[in-house]
Image 1: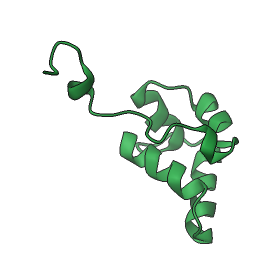
Image 2 (image 1 turned 120 degrees about the vertical axis):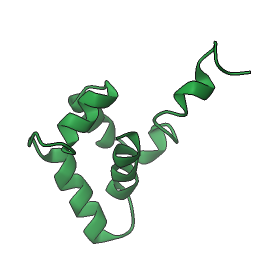
Image 3 (image 1 turned 135 degrees about the vertical axis):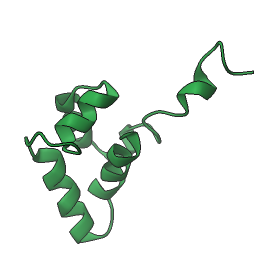
Image 4 (image 1 turned 60 degrees about the horizontal axis):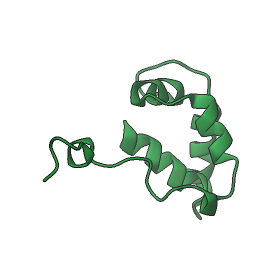
Length: 79
C-alpha cells in the first residue's frame, strides 16, 4: 500500500501528463474501494486530508520517502 501511495506522489509531479492527471484524479477521489486513495491512507495509518495538503505543496518540501522497512527501523530488531 505504501508503494502505491509513493508512486502516486511521484506521478503527481512527474513529467508524463497522462500519469500526472491520473494520479491527481486518484488522490482527489472520495471513493472507498480496496485500493482507493482514502483506504490506502487509512490502512497505512495516515490521514487522507493531510496527504492531500502535502501534495498541494512543492515537491522539494516533502521527504524523499514516506517510510522505510519497518523491521529495519524497529529498535529491537535492527542490529
